[in-house]
Length: 126
View (cartoon, rainbow, N blue to C red):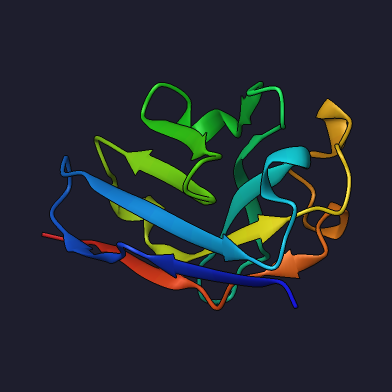
């Protein structure tokens, strides 16, 4: 049974930083694509960043240069380092895991992923 558990969310002022973690179990962690998504109230779920098993990454334009996705295969953990946070980054953040390696063009599409965590809230406000 695959389980993804996110942690690290919280409240921070604009310009601040947070690091999200996603611990995976019951999953061949190192083999497949994984990603971070977010959903703000009244908005659709948005792909934020994704990383393939070879370490290649992709980001949505609004977070490029501010967010960094990484994975520690030894710890079965996915990370999202978020710097220079803005109020528009406020959302529930979800970790997602695919059942295969994804083509680059599909890595930020939520329909490409099979497994999801419960989410962790990030609030950026002064």
